[in-house]
Length: 72
Image (cartoon, rainbow, N blue to C red):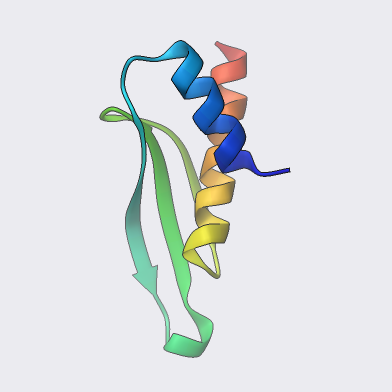
């Protein structure tokens, strides 16, 4: 499954504002980086994730965003 795709479909069907991902933090040497990313609808943060790649961090942020949307 692809959390980013699922979240995009949910946002498009329910929200007027667009989905975006914001890189919050990038640290560590090139061979061992850690990224922190926030998933946002408009200006509202709905999920945050960390990972060894930007894509992994975005996937986790999207997954957490899906969980948050489903709770509300």
